[in-house]
Length: 302
Image (cartoon, rainbow, N blue to C red; front, side, top):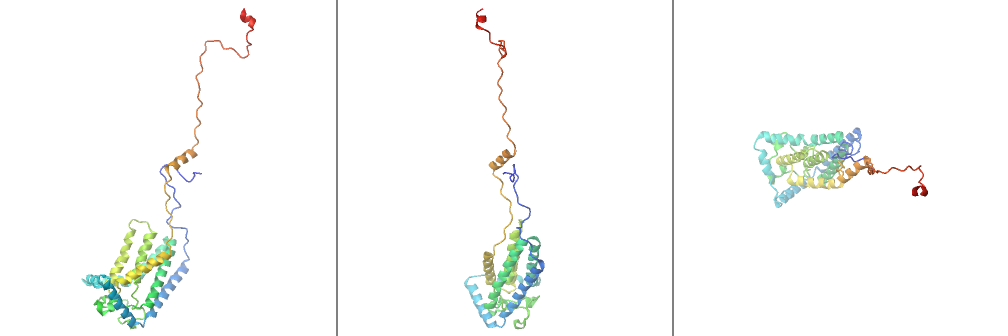
């Protein structure tokens, strides 16, 4: 009955490993699925092209809303980057090269080491991207680098490197009027959350530096507004609410002391109490043998 509980300070643990029993999905299927999702998103964004007038009208509204909310100006971050060519070029390089490879590396790590968390993270990223695609199509938005009112510098075009064509109308690879929400920030935030949930290192909270640095880069290079990141965070929160995180195997609590003592008492046979022995009284009379017949009365009178 108490076979699973040990005495002393030892604790009962489940089988080693931080994962649930979720099996790793087939690699080829996952590669095809992730590639298909990326292509749908990439070509879906093109549907928002040709709506430049609406994109600039929405940009004016977003800029006004940010000022009404007293959000810090995007120019304050860009001013920090423009202190030196090296810093602003590093920011442009980060924007151009880190976003997609970091997300892929995140998924590869989870696929190999945390299959259950991989499935969860892939679903969350797919849900976030699908929600963002809907906004990109229905609410086209010009980035702050295109907004004359903002007075910001297009750092990628001036200092390089740039992933966008100089003229948005001639850009066949990207839709430059899809600023809201910022998937650069949304994906980076999910990468940090996914690694914090999937690991147990005391340093895992430092992964939050990734979305923080991404936020400073996308705002400082004038590719996104603050509200783009805020909307991305809200969408990610909604997706996380509907896609529950996988459960982890955890160490069971120590058995109560009373149970441990009961276990020890059950496993070890109780010693039998020793029979109490009374000291034999010493008699000076001659013992009478049971076989000797009692003397007759007549003999006793004599």
